[in-house]
Amino acid sequence: MSKERFEFKILKDKDGEDTDLTKLSLSESKAFLILLDSMISLAESTGLNKDDFEIKIEKGSACVAIESLNLNPLISEYQDVLSNNSNNSDAVQAFRNVQNLFLSNGLTYSSQIKTINASNDVFNEIYRAKTFRTKSIKRSKEFEIAFLKGYLQEIGGKNPNFHIVSNSKTLKIECIQREAHVIKNKLYEEIMLSVIKTKFKNGKSTYKFVDYYSNENDFKLFKTLINEGYEIEHLDYLRQINRIIKEAIKSDDFIRARQILKLFNNDFTDESIQKTILIITKAFIEHNNIKHIRKSIKSILERKRGEALV
Image (cartoon, rainbow, N blue to C red; front, side, top):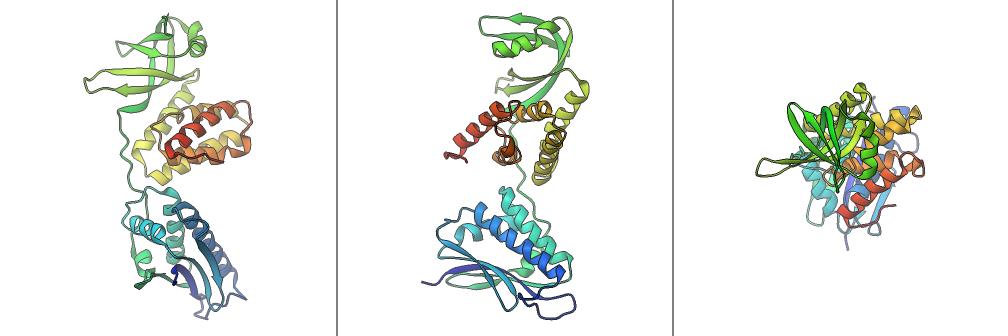
């Protein structure tokens, strides 16, 4: 049975000479590695059955291709990316890398999709398309991370909670006993918090404790980080989260890393964000300051996806 095929190919170098896979220039070598890496990423991120496809590197020009009896998941994802209607950040990034390559370095390329019924040249589609982006994620504000400043007025209750006065309103913050202990010495003082705010159709809201900040710079930093999730393009937001966590780890500040992870330890955080966090912190899975919060995020993501994660 004939196989379906998606390919990227380098045809000519900057001087118009035919590309030969056995003797690539430096620019051709770098370009070929990007194409290969992008194809691997697409194979892994678009739901192809790992036992049913092959990634091929072919001589003549420099060609990297993926072949399978059924490439529909990849082809369908390509169409979504092309129309900026994909929320698969890994696939969007892979196609964006290819698009940037086609636009930037002066080599001559081709790209084709071959199915049982047709063969389509898609180079011009990729080359002429607007910059590939993920679909805008409409984040429901029924649940959100909110940041509050207020005077701690009362702590207690059969079910642990505390009250703060913020903007002349008294707000009840649900918590667990351990969290109440964190702020108990701040009674009648101003405190800074992050909370899960749940809005109901009747206009009322409830608040659940996430974290306490003793430093106003941290309070502002994390508030800005969360608000950017509503304001900037999704891939850029993933990069921002990636950067700020890596900076904390690089400086051996795992307390700050834990503070960041707490903000995304919930059911309403986008899956791609939680996946990014797990990847960044994988090498520190047993670090005392983050192992429990990381395990919680992993469990949430596994529940969402209905499968165990490595």
